[in-house]
Length: 226
Ligand code: NI
Ligand code: MN
Image 1 (cartoon, rainbow, N blue to C red):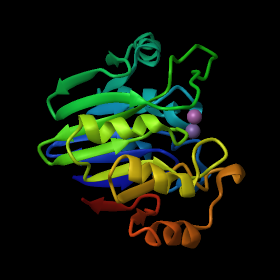
Image 2 (cartoon, helix red, strand yellow):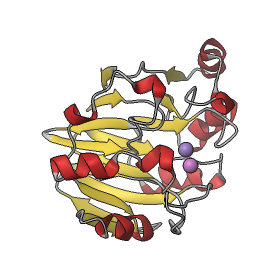
Image 3 (cartoon, rainbow, N blue to C red):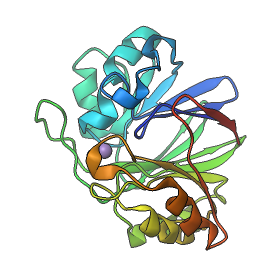
Image 4 (cartoon, rainbow, N blue to C red):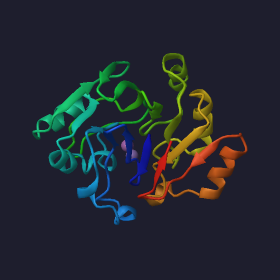
């Protein structure tokens, strides 16, 4: 799998010939000004919840690429109302797509769409594919529900966790999340974009390293093969 970081909680994951795009928020992110959203590939756009810093560019990218939205029922219906294709899910459910199996899992957060429409409950995703399994947590607190993931899913190859604190768990809590999900290779997201979530990168890496874990902090625009 090839993982590309586009800032905040937006990542692309290429599995074979299929491009998944998570939580696109680029045009509103000053840190991502060098990313051209007209160049981002997407076959599916997975949205964890309705907040602006997760959905801002979903419509533009889906209209250009024809990508299908995968999200909660409420968020998906909202995008279907804009003429986009969507696949609605809800928590605890799985569906087999052409690229692999998606399980929608719990997140502890809130969810409202940019126009005030109720977004249902916020979610995370576990993706199982022929190339491996990973967890995209979305915006969430540390929660015991994460312990269900290793009970229900194949061993995770990596996990994408929020680490910026204030609106989500911070990086110290994320080390405990990494214990709960039994995965020691973590890609951090949801940090530095706004003043409330600026973090000390060296300290974050050290807190993980002290527990024998790896915290990967990608530069915006950087890709990594996993
Ligand atoms: Ni949020
Ligand atoms: Mn957020």
